[in-house]
Length: 100
Image (cartoon, rainbow, N blue to C red; front, side):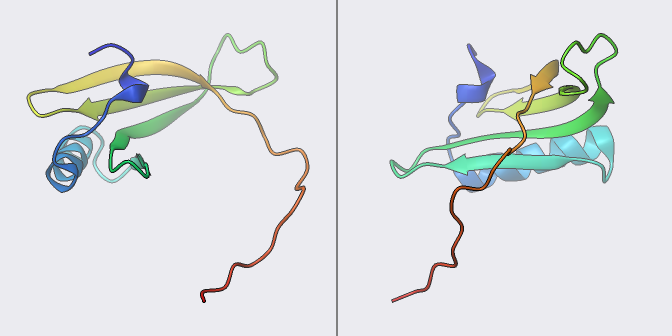
């Protein structure tokens, strides 16, 4: 499977439905699906549930523990991972976009 974060979905709708079903079976109603849709038509997605800050965090509470599910055409993979996210420190520009 390689790097699961670069997992590209085949049959986007069907795979997202299977990912949702697997997350619901494993975690009930406490999960999120994060999907990225790219201009070339591909999609990357995973379901996850946060387990809070890592016990051995050395980044002032910025290392989180997540449980993740990745689905492909023939299997579903579970991973428990450390995730580090950076906070937005300054908004450089913000504006509402209007439709033409």
